[in-house]
Length: 349
Image (cartoon, rainbow, N blue to C red):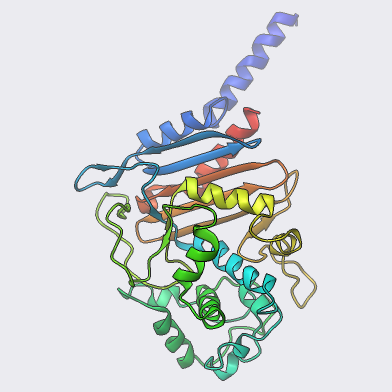
């Protein structure tokens, strides 16, 4: 076989491979355009690589009914992406000497049920407390509040497993953390985050929606895959409750990378998986899922409720960030999109 024949075969193989890999040779913009054209992505996206934003734009509508266009300043509900903010608020209280991670939650919330008296703040942060998750049972209740969830916990018979023995995601645990933040600080969760995170970082389009203030008229409304209304309708905080934009979340990303919000020791703890009682590691630290399977440490979180999906992926070692917020619910194949975007970034280095 001569050189040119071999080269032709190699190129043909690469061509066939790319037919089955959507991100092959494509830029992040190509992938975003592709997903949008197929009706799978309506939202706001920011991509950072090597300390440089390589994509920052929006596609689609904030309100399908009135054809209101999404802008970079349009807040979208981020659902469980609120958890890194709750964890950061707890860390800020620790830095001020107002709590210890191994303190019992009941020290600050004596009203917790007896079965939860020995749960530590560390257990709550790492989803290893054994506290039952309310979401599949109560989240359909319009206007649901933290007090509703705490009352429901009082009615439960006990933990699902001994604290520290197992990882099991619990929105209820982060509602308890929100209540601890309020009890120690003497102010609302909303007010604490505004004063200590949002305002210092100039996250001007980010807010906690807890029903205490009028609804932001500029926010995006939620829809299902058929573009029928499916808007956010509960009022819990700690596990969710935050509206934001990719540009604001990028400011949060940079503050964490630069240790301007929390110190390096606490940042390291935040990115350290919890060691279970059997000696095995979980894949969650303080408010972040943690992945060591690649070249370095990757931390991430997703969110999803009603018509909203959210993605915050951060490669710590290689200085890459992908942030995507959408308001067309399950039309968005979050994991496929992330895989394609990661492949695109890798190939376009």
